[in-house]
Length: 240
Image 1 (spheres, helix red, strand yellow):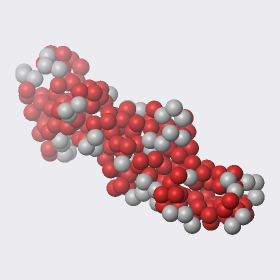
Image 2 (cartoon, rainbow, N blue to C red):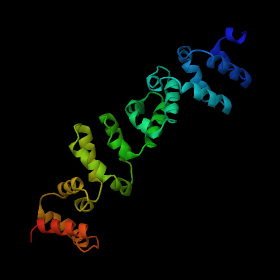
Image 3 (cartoon, rainbow, N blue to C red):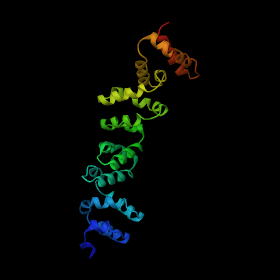
Image 4 (cartoon, rainbow, N blue to C red):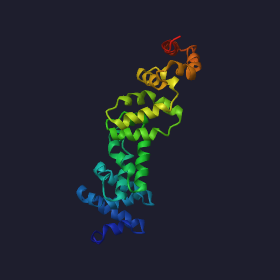
């Protein structure tokens, strides 16, 4: 009863872990609405040096409307909300990606770093194919730093974005594919990727032959029948 009369925020910052734990007892005894008022306090306890306090605070915080707290005025609460999101299932995190993307440019470096790390834990192809164009734009920026081999593995996901309704996404997709080997793209097993590869090759047969003939000929003798056929068709389209 005595503790209940004291400043709860001060108790949660007390040097004695027993006092901080008791403050959590008080918080857990309040209604959800009453606890929400103390979101900043709980967010601070999620970074506590004591593991038990951290876990209890995280559990209590997770009961809030976490997505709503991503736009909270206090950076510590936004960061805590991102931490709570990290415990969600992959499916829920993917759905929430649109709420996370704006925090990539948050005023707080800690918050923006947490947002970036959260998105990086989602498969790139899931972000690239997201319904929210803001997520697709962010995904393009995220994968732009990938090595060529990693980027090449995403070609089939990137190619459809050339027809995206969002201009920035279309441009970004073209820039990503432009980083890849155009001959590899031109003989890809996915038609939309091959189409992009042919565009990148250019429409001047002499120029294409001068730059890429050796690679195309090499592809025309590989063991894979489908790839060999596509390479031969491409060579034939260049003329004699």
